[in-house]
Amino acid sequence: MPRIPALDGLRAVAIAAVVAYHIDSSVVPAGHYGVCLFFVLSGYVVTGSLRAEMERTGRVDLGSFYRKRVLRLLPALLAVCLVMVAVGTDWSRLIAALGFYANYARIEGLDLERLTHTWFIAVIAHFYLLWPLSIAALRTRHLENRIVGGLALAAIVWRAIAIEVMSPGWVYNATDTNAAALLVGCWLAVARPATWRFAMWAVPALLALMLVPAFGNTDTAVLWGGFAALALSALTVQYALTSPEWLANRVLLRVAELSFGLYLWHYVFIRSDIALWLALVLTVAATAASWYLLEKPVLRWAARRKGQVRTLPALSA
Image (cartoon, rainbow, N blue to C red; front, side, top):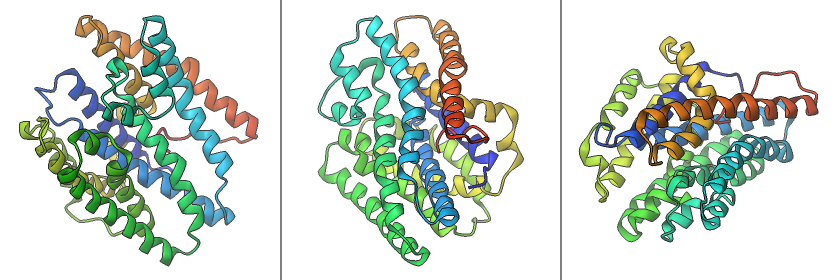
């Protein structure tokens, strides 16, 4: 799939919202909706890439897909966990993070402390594991549109039901309830609906939603507000597909490139018992070290091993 720089810029907007929320939730009380935006974006990019591969080769190379995702997720996550071992973090937390079940461990009441944010990585890992199998099984575009659209609708309905019948912790963390945002992004990739002409207002509207205090509470308001975040996230992705220049500026693209390491490291330091300015300095340093000394070399090694000369893959792909 041709790379659209504005989608990378949108990833930077999503990570900035989440980091701001973790720094001071009183300023950005609903910045956690940046995760919803990231889910929609991930669903779109992964599905678009898989469909492009099927159109080009007639199949999905599952082995290649899984290798890429393991190399994208595991080295940086392992580095964070090794640091956590050094500072005495309990093994139950480390295993939950590295085993990609941190979201369900959190639901069961395990306090993951400075690895709490790895619940999001668990959801993404489950999506990476299951979704390519579904795409590989869908052979015709007509059938694909119907099935993916039906799955997205079913996931939305289930999330609404789950708000009433499941615990708030389940709705917020579980893979099945977060599938709504992921599958909406998948549907956008297969249906390719025309961009709504007012979609340009989706970005400021989503950012404004993140500033509403009611959606930063721990009651069900934040969960119902997630549907507004989902709709605005979908429109935001649609807007990014028109390639607005401001979403493709160098600063946002640079942040997007470093976004995975930034997500992993910022929470570790912000939730440590140190001054905020020092936490931010250490976050920047660890993120840069992770990218230049670990993530980027691993990606280049993988590309050389496969004998490919190509641009480094997008972080959410």
